[in-house]
Amino acid sequence: MSRFASLSDEFYVNMNLSTEMELPQSRETVLHLFEQVRKRYPTMRNFYARERGEFVLEEEKEGGAYRWTSIEPKRICSGNVNPESVDDALEQHGVLLELAPYTLSVSPLDCEALNVMFGFDYTYRGNHNQLLVDALGISPALEKLVEIEGVKVVANEPSIQLAFDPDCRVQCRVSFETRTSAYHIRTGEFPEEQLSVYLTARRYGSLEPGETYQEVMQHLAGLCQSLIDNYVAENVLLPLQQTIAIR
Image (tube, rainbow, N blue to C red; front, side, top):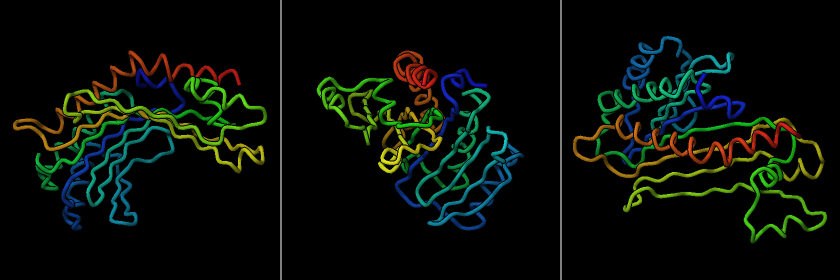
């Protein structure tokens, strides 16, 4: 399993390419792309259509580790859940980015944004919002609010976004998604749900001359891995994991 797998209950690496123009969605075009993907990954054989022009090709999910890809009107997506390694996931995303210019006529000019996202899910039965306060703390300016007698934290999804170049074309965001509602808190009935931590690196705008989508993706993925190794794992993921373990 990936070296990041031990940091959470479930780990995944996703890639999204958003385009300025709508992608071709004819039957022949979509099926041709997915047939090329399936030649590389024969176990990706579940094909179906969703509403609003979204087409999906994925593996069986029963084993807990699976690949998926999708095409939307203006977005190409690829995901690998619980991959054997980060490189394995990036290789899959690279295959899709290699095929897109030829099968979907995606030009280097047509890039609105390219994202690489590393996701970490934690299964927890309880108030996810309070868990984040206990594990990671809260801004000093707000600490006294959560100390008011009788109050309960109903919403707490902090995020921070950073630019890594003078033009702000390369940005990274650390964000959280909690799945505890006011109903759960009011009734005291907490289902076993997943709390998610997302680290997303995004590059905005068209590619430079001679630059490829695969090169941009690798740069973004490298940035994510560096941030996880040097900051996010020690200061976010491990404290969250440890707090859940003692509950």
